[in-house]
Length: 305
Image 1 (cartoon, rainbow, N blue to C red):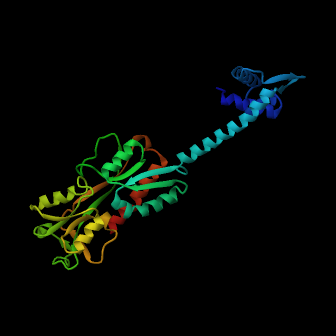
Image 2 (cartoon, rainbow, N blue to C red):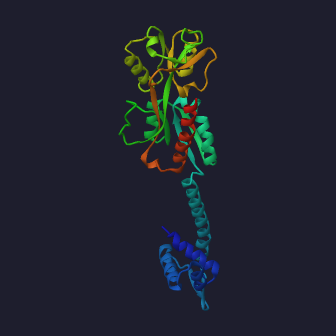
């Protein structure tokens, strides 16, 4: 394998016409240049220069190698510049798997902020619930995921991944517009104990846990009838008078005209949303800018909603 540094020396000697001139151009000593050329000749297995009067001239092998050295060095410079751009978050691709309610809700604002920070980075955004998202992250298919934290809302898993908290997403009660409690600003969940409830099955272990805990804390076991595939479908069932529902705020950026959204009295149930990546990518500029974009855009919007 030919040494790239020695190829640079060879190219400079051929261009400058002498060892002394090349040494000046490279800020080397003439002796160091001669040593590099001798080592390169041993690597090449053939003479690269021959004496010409008091100087040297390249052999056919030297000329050939100097020409190829120019291409090699140019490609290396391109690679170095591409790496600088990548490290600066100005090139490459960021692959993400995102909680569906976030993808259709507030992620567009975060993407807009990310685009201002990293205009040359391409984004691959796909929806996925927690299990699929974590599998994609661990397998290397995704660089970053936005997911509801598995398990208790008060514990961050010690599973070898890097978690960055984005927002606590509070649940709101969604009622048919003609519901007897629709005019109230605050609603006690216990007042809904006799209602039919609409549940959402798309992420039962994570998104529904706060709902179950809310029912338990209020001391009742609800009648659950309709089970929606996602939160927009849950709104549809509520609008049709088939029950009431607890839906997280991030999934309520678009609210139907035939339902109302109200706060629960007291401490509202919530789910914790995290941006999660692998430790090796935690310092990646593209990942960092996306996480900061999520935090700067999503949390304030939910707080004022």
